[in-house]
Image 1 (cartoon, rainbow, N blue to C red):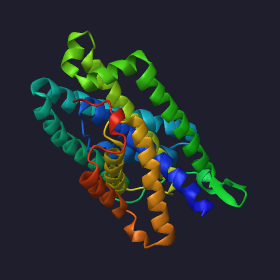
Image 2: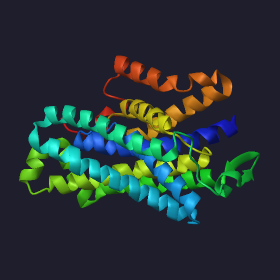
Image 3: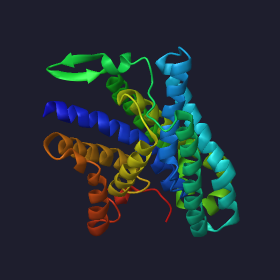
Image 4: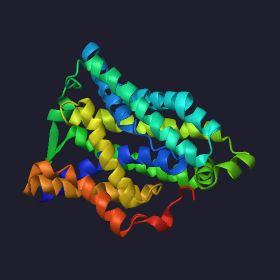
Length: 295
């Protein structure tokens, strides 16, 4: 049982990184970015490709994956989301950006699929995946230690940024009322670009870590993580970053227990069940009173 709880902590940490990025774009900018899973896969593919052709250390590969996914998100913002936001009203823009994100997802996934030859790609060498530590009978891989530590750091930094910094106050202001924020001097376009970069970078961080931990990755994995992230955001409350973190670990624990003590093929059904139950009984999410997204 203790090992399963530890596995859930690792899985929840990855889901936290992935879901925080989606929460930032959806809760503050109204961008339900269906390309978020594709950015996750793209970062893993980028790191895997470079690891095969170079001898770059893991930390450098991780940074390249983060920056690569962040820049890809910036391209989506510049080419699609930003233009749509300028042309349409708020509600029409959200629907148009949803459609645009589907197109972005198709393009990015096609690039990765053709580049990888429609096969699983992996990061080498695998010392981070094979080496680990034993503590009180519990086994933890080196990459899993990195995952937990990096998640703690990222959650702390994002929370401080959103709640304490000037930029974070601007993010919350735009989330509440983008029009008034612009009139008060907030550079909404610049803020949107920065938020999208951070969102993509978090997807990239999770993508590289998962590619290393799971001995490889392919395109459909991104869609699975995207569905799970929807369940997490609905459970925690859209735009509520702390609720997102709690929900990520709750769902990871449920998935881990299903795999360990039940039919493992039911694992991905957890996300569907959570979405259905929350929408039926508490559609505002578990932590709705703390949400900062737009009214």
